Length: 115
Image 1 (cartoon, rainbow, N blue to C red):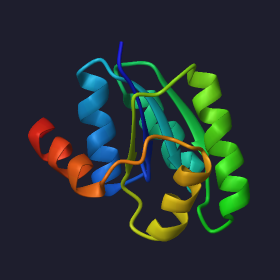
Image 2: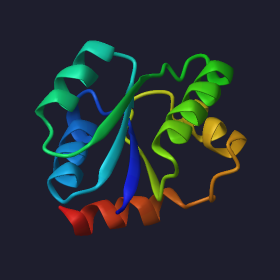
Image 3: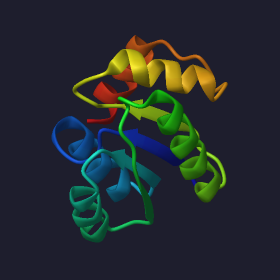
Image 4: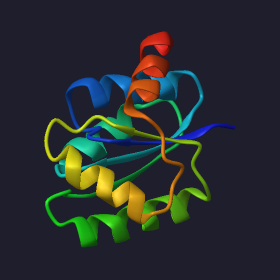
């Protein structure tokens, strides 16, 4: 079973991606600043998903919370960054986690193929 984290899942592209991935059976970790929207999204998805309120403005805390989310999930195969703001902070959080360094263009091309 594939597992993915979607950062910025509360609305827009992140929400649409989460809906598509869940429909395909991917277990999701949903992260965003607006927890109430994450709860609403999680409750409407057909598959298993975990939520974590994460604000990238505080990169140290965001790093810790993202690690917690991944621990709760057991592992993840992919992290999608769909946040409309603070991409630099998000990238530094991912580097701090020592996750596989993936070129954003590769992630975007995979997303385009999935849609």
